[in-house]
Image (cartoon, rainbow, N blue to C red; front, side, top):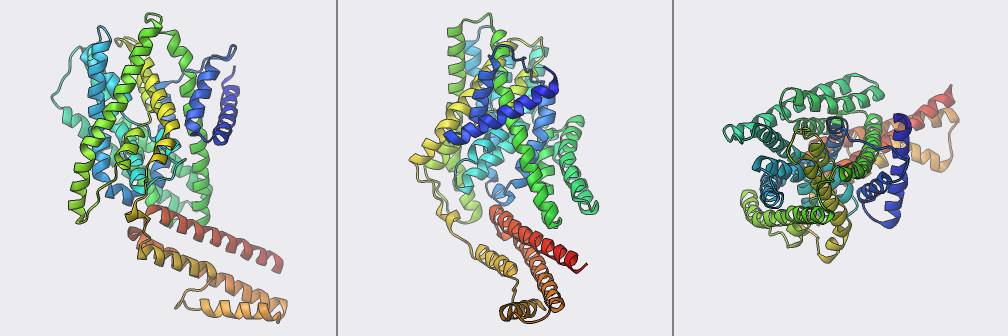
Length: 516
């Protein structure tokens, strides 16, 4: 089947499976993986091979940047201790636990190969986390920790993966320079990402064409990732840093550009993430066909053992570190926060794996020892965490009271920002020159049905112009208060102002056309 027809078929299948997921109230990622597994064994359908390097370079940059664009970086900073403990500590702890068990259960598996397997399955996936978590209403602390972890943990896992692969091929580990192997790629990746983000922001502010500005934001995702990888840095951190910087500068864009950019990114994210999970499921036939040397019973035992260790080790790490970290954060902030049992439990159960783990497994060299069984176990890890945990997460959440009073309370800054935006949309901001008067004159004449067409048009134009100035003033107020507002509130209020501005500009263009 030609490539074009295959892509169209996969997109069509993604639509149908996502629709089915919505009807059945399960995460779309789960339905897509299961659907891909079913499609893999339909007679006559061609085998879809996932090219590892292409998968990482094509899917990862835009999906990471899409996540970074909507990340609440204030919450990210507030929870940085938890995020680092998971993104680096949990990855290393999980990789070690999996390596120990795998080496005991798989005959002839050396330590470097066992660590390679651990590094492959250790990091939860950003795309999987977003796909599953957006279906549930969770406290911002939990969402910030899980999404923050999934944004940066691939960097630590992929560095460990490369070290372990090199050690396997060389026949021995080299521990000297291990810390530098982690730090240097991180610093390079972040530096490249920030440079790409600044270049993209400059271009988007000077292109004066919203379509070109949107294209620039997409190119920045790939540029930051590929440039960082080419220089020996972390492409993951490059894309995340670039996306974070672009997200910070979005308030400087025109309202229409901002609205259309958000829509474009949502569309691309939906298509790419749907294809990712569908293609993951489609790999099953090729994976199983290569495992002729292992009895089915042994494969099931290995898959169950590795998946169980993967899940249990995350629980162990989270519960060992979460409450000490909470105490440390409370001391740093000068307050107190004792998270309920639901917090570490939900975080522990939300470690879904995805395309990064499978792509890393498939990227193993052909001469790599026990390559086929490692790929199979990586697939089983994705299945167990995504399908089993993803489908039961709703039940787990339902068992707990997950409200966070500290976050549920509306701050005075949030109330003031909402009132300011509501006043701007109404066209009235106390103290704004000309706004109150223009609004009052227009409404008075409209209520009394007096005046001629030209006078009414002039008043309408003055009214709309006054509202634009009010909206501009409110947007500047949001910029000044952005450090006092959470990301969700800032994004919501900004979108309300953008939508109102677009309606006003549409009305002004129609008024101009009528006058002509």
